[in-house]
Amino acid sequence: MIRALVSSAALIAGCLLAPSAFADTPDSGHTAWVLTATALVLFMTIPGLALFYGGLVRSKNVLSILMQCFVITSLMSILWLVAGYSLAFTEGNAFIGGLDKALFAGVGQDSMSGSLPETAFALFQLTFAIITPALIVGGFAERMRFSAVLVFSALWLFVVYVPVCHWVWGGGWLSAMGVKDFAGGIVVHITAGTAALVAAMMLGNRRGFMETPMMPHNMTLTLTGAGMLWVGWFGFNGGSALAANGDAAMAMFVTHISASAGAFVWLSAEWIKYGKPSALGAVTGMVAGLGTITPASGFVGPAGALVIGILAGGICFVATNYIKRTLRIDDSLDVFPVHGVGGILGTLLTGVFASSALGIFSGQESIDIGTQLSAQAIGVVATLIYTAVATMILLWLTDRLIGNRVSDEDEQQGLDIVSHNERGYDL
Image (cartoon, rainbow, N blue to C red; front, side, top):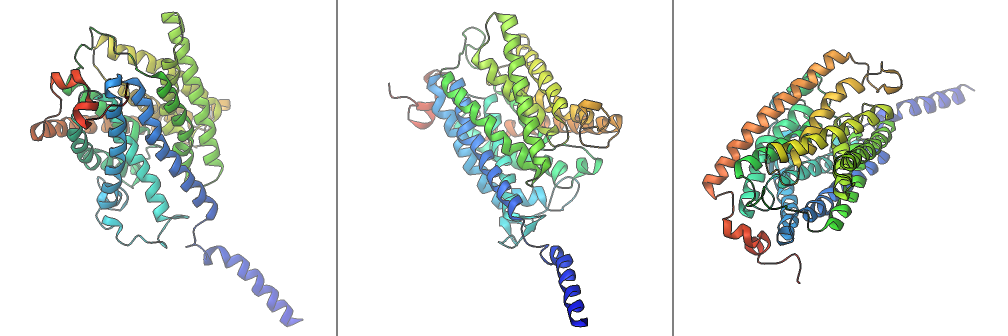
């Protein structure tokens, strides 16, 4: 009898201790989801963003856009391995991490990041470091040298993306302030949007920008890419929960609602203003809704996401028209008014709709709206200023080193032939 009791007690104790005994073992469900999300986010850049952007430019430049997205993917991957991951996610200081994990020193198959293999976490974060500089391509499309794109993107990763990533997600000063950015409103969209606007202003408008309509050459490509972005964004936002749980499910649900609302509001605004809804308006509104919900996706509920998507579609529509038609800035593919303005709007609205005290519009956080909104605003302003100044310096430097802009003759001929000696279409 005593022996049976002892055996039972030992069995119970073993069951109770089992979780701690396997604390260093990856959770297979969480790991499978994050690996899946990683593939989805990479799919957003190649081929999603590449096709989305490629269809929006003129036919003589389509291959150059595809190449820029493709090679940025390769280059950022190498730089992330060399030092990017370490500088973003090791302790360091409030501004930047250290080099303890440069070339993934000490990161092996058994290394853990929470319940995930560290390699899974690092690879997931790499896909964000890829798509952010790729987004900037839309600000200088059809007029920047390929060599300048690569040098600028490499420098920008280390000078802008990595520090801001550390501030928000790597234990830096914005994280310590309590700034909330679930999946990259600050880290991805504000930085990319601001950099694209600065690049558009410093390189100048495309030749004939205000005189000749520069229509997308292939909306079929653009809609195909847009669909890939919408699907891939489930990994972007849902994967940022870093677990297969309710946070991931809610992030995916609110992402879909905001994208739907953004698309419908934008095309409705076009319908009212210009008499017809366009495919370009629908997909641009969708991206605006996706970018705006990104920082809030793990914190808000469906009703809040609906409001965020409606505001995204309307405000980003106004911002796009203002920058192009009033300010006459050739942010060629509307990176700042869609991603930059959307990231700013979403980051600020996170401070409101994340609150659990808003009834049907409640989010999932017990926060004081005024205090949180103040922290969000500091994050927005600091990132805007830092990104703008750093981007100006980097563009000035690359222009001095190799020259940023192609000649008028090369721009007229098209970057497909000039940069790559190939054509996107063999007609």
